[in-house]
Structures are given as C-alpha cells and as structure tokens.
Length: 461
Image 1 (tube, rainbow, N blue to C red):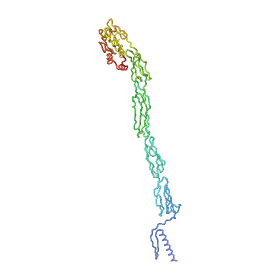
Image 2 (image 1 turned 60 degrees about the vertical axis):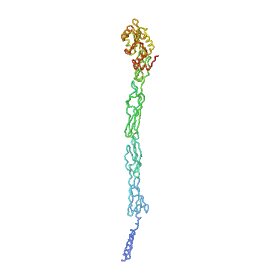
Image 3 (image 1 turned 135 degrees about the horizontal axis):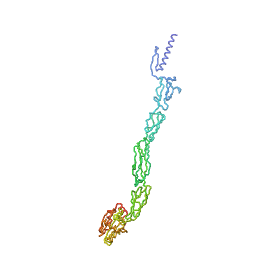
C-alpha cells in the first residue's frame, strides 16, 4: 500500500505533464531511469472555441460591428470571432474595417466612428447662404445674392461623405443695370421777337440696385440752359455703374414759335418786320412809296395770343401844302419823305427846259420809285409860274425858294435836294434820267430803299 501511492502520483504527474506540453507545444518522454525529458517542437496554438466570452463584447459608438463566430450567430466574442466594423450615416470609420478575437483575449485592432463634418463655408461677398444642418454630412447650403446681383456658379452645395463640399464656391455678380429716370418732356414757347427759347431742366435721378455706386453719367444733346431753336430736341442720359452695366433714358424738349397771320402790304406801300416777320414779339412797320403818306399806325406787334396789335395802315397820295409862308416851311413837309428836283428856266420856250421836261416825263415812274417830286419854276416876273404836280405856288413862295436855294432866273438850271433838305447836286444843262437815277441810287438811297428797289426791280419801260 505504501509503494502503490508513489506510483500512482508519478502516473498522474506524467499524464499532466504530457497534457501541459501538448497544449503548450512541448512533448515529454520518460527514460528508463524514470527521468522526464522535454523536447520543444513548434505547433499551432490550440483555439478553445468553448468559452462564450473570450474577448470583451465589441460595441462601437455611432456604428455597428457585424460579427461571425465559429460557434454560430449567437456568439459575438468567442475565440476566433471575426467582426466587420461600420459607422452610422454621418460618421466616418477611423481604424481597421475588420478585427478578430485573438488568444490574448484582445481584438486584433481598434476603430471608432467620428462624425463627418465639412469646413465652414467662407462668406459670400454681396450674398449669403443658409444650411439645413450646419456643416454636418448631408447638410445642404443654398446661396442667395443681394438685390442687384446675380449668382454665377453652383446655387447650392452639399456636405459629402468625404467631408468635402460638392461643387464649387459661387460668386455674386452685378448684372443688374442701374435705375435712371429722366426729367419729364416739356414744351417751351420761343421768347418774344425770337425763334429760340432758353430751356432749363434738372439732373436725372440715378440709383444702382447693387452697391449703390454710379461710375459716371453721360448726356447726348444740348446742355441745360441752352438756347434751343424751334423744333423737337431729344436729350438722352446714360448711367454706368461700377460693374460697367448701363441704363439710358430720354426726354424731349419741344420749342414752339407762336405766329400771327402774315400781314399784307398796303397798296403803294410795303412792310418791314423784325425776326421772322410774324412770330410772337415781332414788330412790323408800314412804309409807303414815294409820293404816298401812311395813314394809321406805323408799327404793329404780334401778341402772344397770335393776333396783331392795332389796325393795318394804308398809303394815300401825299398832300402837298403850297399855302405856306416860307421856303423852309415848304421844304420841311418833305423831310424824310420825298426828294425834290427843282427845275428853273427863263421861259417855257427855253430849249433846255423842253429837252429836260421831255426826259423827265418819260422817267416819271423811275422818279416815283426813288421818291422824287419835281418842282418847276418857269419864267420871269410878272409872268413867272411855279408848280408842283397840279398845284400852283404863290409869287412870294417862288421868290423865297429862289433866294433860299440861290436859283437864278436868267438861265436853265436844276437842283437836287435830298430828304433832309440838303442841296446835293446842281445841273446847268439838260441831263438824261439815267444819269440822275445813277446818282440817286449811288449816293442818296438808304439800305432799305435799295433793298426795295432791288426787290421790285426796274418796273418802268
């Protein structure tokens, strides 16, 4: 009995040693002298699939571990279990995508889920954006531009799974032209005695719907305060903003001339007018031909109501007053009206007198055109005769005229007096009418008389 116990213990030790080294990669033999020899040999570790929780339970926050165990689907952490790791939407897996439960009771790797976030989008000049869920994955940011600007590029961007924003950053471009309002169109009446009007207007109203900056405003047409002629005048303004967008407007200034009816010249007379002859403020003056006198107003004015002031004048044959007491009184009645051609001869049978009378009778029309009245002093006392047209001069008046103008009775002579009573030319022999007309036309006619003569022409045959 005492010897059997040690033998049993030895057997148990041998068996246990053999099991230990089988499990640890070692083998043991017993020699003939009962010594144990250990021989090391390589071998794969023996996995124990029977422990249900060999590794700790694998849980990933904001994610999921899909595990497969050799012992079945109900085992999640037995030795040899493999797990595939993933994250919930909006999260990114950092670490290994799959791990295995090792004999060391640890998993072969480590991983965790981090929330996916994109960088904060930069501010958009002249615009803004609004995001659905901030900078998280799946957030959509919509861009809008300030009034007057238009977006170019992507109108919205989405935070993607890789933490980057989709698309590209847009820009707000000023494509809206400025707003411009011109002054209102207007009608301006010409000023008195003119065919023009001075017109003023204010500046156009200009506003930019974007940044409010106006680079420049140009104008086509006359300046404010210009003197504009009759008719329509178009003024156009163009405004340019900082982005070179432009907008234009225009308005019309119409200058009107108020006119009176055209005046008709009186018989044996003519009319001279200022400005355009019948516009508002124009003055028209009535004139009569030589040998005729004006009856009525000399001047008429075109009023704003387009009617002439006063009544029309007429021209009547000039009445010569021979019942005066002096030569000066006789000549003064022709002042600025008529020229005098005084003919003196010793008798009506004088050869020079007859030649001159014949020439003047043929030129009577030309004398009237040049406003010349012929006065005859013929004979000697007491048979001396003086006449103008069909009127006789008294002996006293004849004598005073001869003395005042130094006209001799002894021989034929002729004196030309201008409209101002000045002795301008003397003739000692008969003179052709053309020579007299040339002298008058050259030295005695006013510019107005010259114009009238040129306008009518030489109407005498």
